[in-house]
Length: 272
Image 1: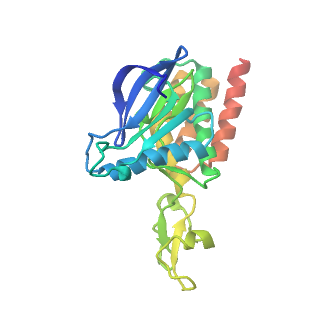
Image 2: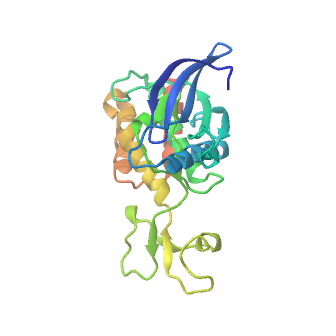
Image 3: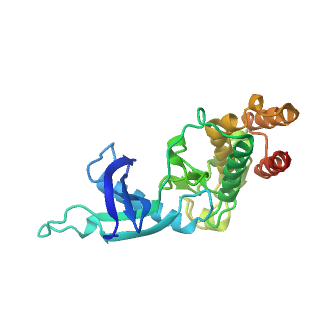
């Protein structure tokens, strides 16, 4: 970490961190470190937890559309501070590959690039739905949480990502689950993390499938409706794209259908 030559400080950041730009062996890198000055309603302990959570999540999730982490350094935590110690603030940082900001609404893409990016983003949603940690929800879904890295759109912010799905009650008369998801009983492991007493007849449930539906909804509104705009495609593909976007808008398409549909379109336009 000490061998990275920082050239620009605080070029970006979020609720828990700031981002510096540096070089190591000629390679440009992004160095995230814990912000000690930002308040925004969050105390130091909370921001420290979010920073560590992002490192842990990135270490457990592996997909080519998630930003690559090269390493991290945790020198000391806020809890290590003592009155006789001058080190009041935690010292932690993580090193990631560098990416560029972009605006999907104005950036020029070829037809093949549009379909490639759309497929890769849909594949990311599919991976998150069946990840080793369960179905993951991108809670804080924003366009600036994605960067362009070597002509690939990558998710860069993982401190607000969760495998907890929307809650519901099994005895409710009509489903209150968003996206018409079914209210299903919790499994034994899930039940152990609730307020329900062991062995009790608890009626708490989960809106199974909410996380992937929410990710599809946000991916459509943030990227896919711009990448797949039918008017920029050859006339023979416009009808299928219009139908795909309609189903995305209504959130009536399964993630597997979306991925397979984009693969088919990509093959057609790669051949042409």
